[in-house]
Image (tube, rainbow, N blue to C red; front, side):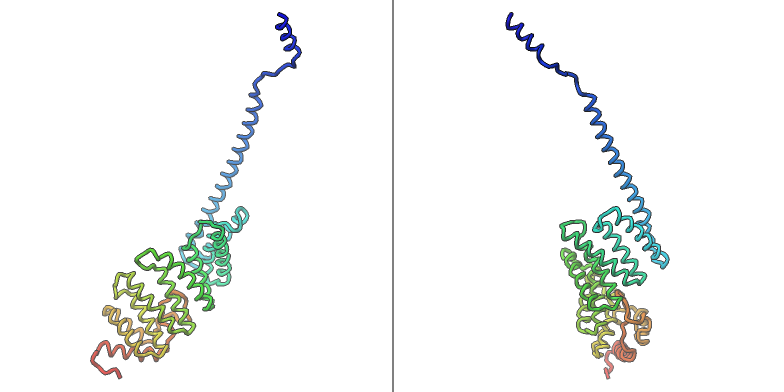
Length: 324
């Protein structure tokens, strides 16, 4: 009895305990955190929605205008890309992949407008971002993207007549394109196109041998690509270009053989058109230095071309006739 009375006294002397459940406080904290998270989520949704609306309004509209290919459309496309770039540079990091893509498209349109200096600046800014992304280990861009941007820069240099820099950049692009095509049994059109431009630049720089070597590789790869169809217009055209280069080099007999080969591959109507064009000294070409991807007759002497073509025509129509 004494021990129980002692326990009761001890309990009476203890401070009162609060056994109430703190439901209201925990619920309030949880509700506040949920409200904050919902607001942040809604803000993120709004931000993303505005960005997607801007992409639809400007980037996609720019692509449509660019695809139309008219001067006014190019101007409108550049305006769309510039407006989206201004917005992206505020909302995103200056080295963001979106900005890189926009700079590439703007550079391409400016090139079509022949605003070469502005196009070059846009492409170089794009290349800087692309190389930074690759250096940091990002897999957003790959070698195909690098090859495409390098090719765009080379085209601008080509039209600016910076032939040495253009040649170097074409070769960098070609190295990437070859790596990409290494796993395929067929050559790619990108490789052939770049080789055509390399041949053209060598020709413009006066390096005839290098131009002929590049053109021979074009013929070999293109023959594989068209499955050996020797009368394909592209192959015939490259033979005509080779013949004109040979004329410039003073190798008239080689030029004659090349023109004969081109004529043999033509159908009757095509052969007549080719011979008439060559007899006029390539008057259907655009003239001037010529831009990349051209299939022009070159800048050969009209008299030399006519001489070589006359000899080729005699040899083709009269195989047993004397050459001289």
